[in-house]
Length: 420
Ligand SMILES: Nc1ncnc2c1ncn2[C@@H]1O[C@H](COP(=O)(O)OP(=O)(O)O)[C@@H](O)[C@H]1O
Ligand SMILES: [Mg+2]
Image 1 (cartoon, rainbow, N blue to C red):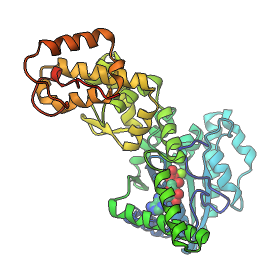
Image 2: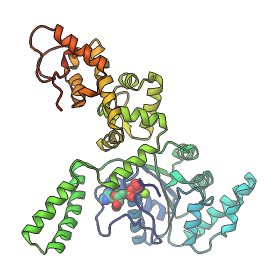
Image 3: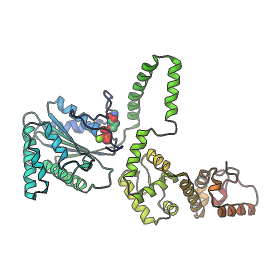
Image 4: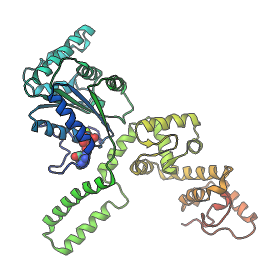
């Protein structure tokens, strides 16, 4: 299981990554949609809900919440999850679903992947009939989690279920990451086909709002306070010391789990895209394709293609002006660039901006990049340092002591005294 994934679904359909008792925050509109779909299901109209979002957005959690709601309404529930492991058998999510249901088709049936199209159709029909039968008395909710990893046959079977015309108290909630870029052809095609179906509802989970973040954090800090109380029994000195430790332990560093999850997202990009994203991360939170092309010595078309890939993966957002979707992505990408490369990128960026016609308007930006070089006056090639000194010596009048203050052209902005 990759670092970006946030939990496994156990036999009870609950992902083990969900701490017990922590309340679901927000998602009011999405839960109302799902409640409406459950009602329609009980009225005999089959429903398919596609829940998309980035890793950690809460797709599994929302599905679990729907399972709880469905159970309260008396529906049977069955959960299957696609596996990232290449060895998982075809139709794996459905095989898991049938484990928990009476009157299931035999698992051997699903070995017939190599069979003809006709045999496959028969298999789909047998599956649909079995699910419709299982839904017969009181309704059935099937959750198919992490469909971004499902085999093409599983995805086709889902489409088959969605377009079935037999009335059935059957609802399928299928979750998938819409941020994966590799091997997603069958799923994309299926989502496009399903969008035309009236029985299909699509939900995209974005980030929580600010107030919802506060509510989510309150739940986290409550449990932190409880844990500190248990360990200290309220001794004010120990409480203070442990509190300080908590603050300092995340100071300026990403927690390992966050860093791993973010790295996992970055590692799924193609190598050329990673290079462009890393350079963009060093240069700023907004991405200037021409500048990135210059500093990475790549042509602009290749940079634009890489930026498209990063946008599909939701690492970047906005068009045509692109920026990092989260600061976390930018921080993680930047931290993975070795220091000499980082300095070289800043130097090339400063030179690129200085050489542009609008250097005067970019005073702050240019000085930002020179300042990033910090003690790296040494990082400048000797030739560049000599040219810089020569230019400085030719200049009349005082040079701004701190770059970024006072007027001047871009070329004037290099700090004279680079701190050690
Ligand atoms: N709306 C929410 N309120 C509170 N916690 C949430 C919410 N959405 C997700 N979480 C928590 O965030 C973590 C990641 O959610 P998860 O459903 O596993 O994400 P995904 O399946 O999209 O990768 C889990 O611990 C989950 O319980
Ligand atoms: Mg999940």
